[in-house]
Amino acid sequence: MTNVIKLYIKGMVCERCIAVIKAELRSIGLVPEKIELGEITLISAAARVDMQLIDSKLRSLGFGMLQDRKQAVVNEVRALVEEVYSGDYDFPSHFRREPRPAMGSAHAAFPSR
Image 1 (cartoon, rainbow, N blue to C red):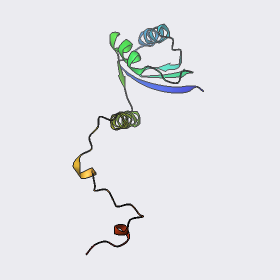
Image 2 (spheres, helix red, strand yellow):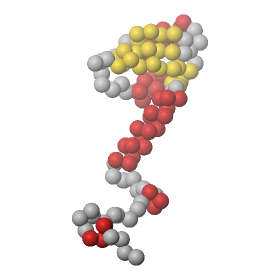
Image 3 (cartoon, one colour):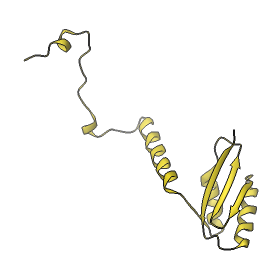
Image 4 (cartoon, rainbow, N blue to C red):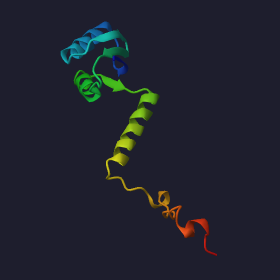
């Protein structure tokens, strides 16, 4: 399975920028499918691409990686899900409710008055 990844780059203003970024991506084993000013399309066979490594390499060259809104929301949701399922997350009290009685108990069928 191949992944198509679009990166949006801040600071790409000329052909030299494209050449420098292309060389840097190749140095970490990524071959861009298409590079234009401000946008890179990568195709990767890897299950996951290390976006932090790419960002750090680009920053060291004076560029910045931008995220489109959809990807930013996906990243925020992913981080929240990871936090909740880590076992360390404590839900606020308004999310908690009293446990309901079991269906087999007499109290469940006939609430007290």
